[in-house]
Length: 109
Length: 116
Image (cartoon, rainbow over all chains, first blue to last red; front, top):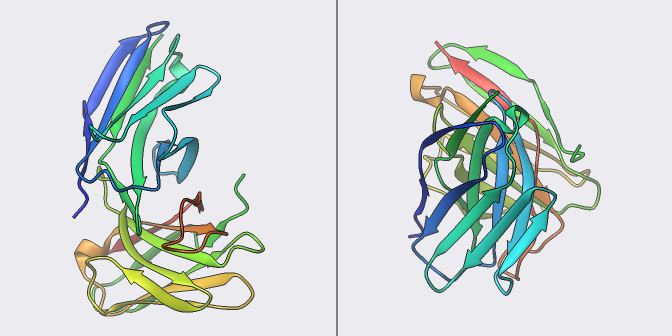
């Protein structure tokens, strides 16, 4: 059974700092890995999707990497801003989609 | 804006009642999945429908049931509500075929269900 773990559970950084969020999964037989953003009480906003054959994807200040063999992904956020404050979820897709519990990010002005 | 909509936005029910949540997928999306997200946790897979048939189910009891209709809408029904059913319920649609490779799921804004 696929298990997805996200570390840290919460992170607080000053504005402007670069940061890394971590995601690990137990079964490397996945189709893709997706990173989402969730604001309090809201739905999920897709940030990046990495296919199983890819190593990384970039969108603006975000860069996500995937190492399928080691069961790890990282989400790198450059030059963080207060508007980046949210919960970040990673999810792996095999026959269904399995989510981690998320990292709650606070960026202080 | 993903084009996936859900109704209602919020709902309050009493323990033992039944509830129906609705989702409207993007046009052309034959696959819809439902998830339950308890406070402070990641979403948990409930089940998936492909072309109006259930195609996979997570670890949820039979009182959670669903329907998918030809017009790209779907329903999640929960009978005999329990306090622990209080959560955000998310639906996600896609144009992929389950079990046939990678596809992206597009999530709706969710329905917040409170059971008292």
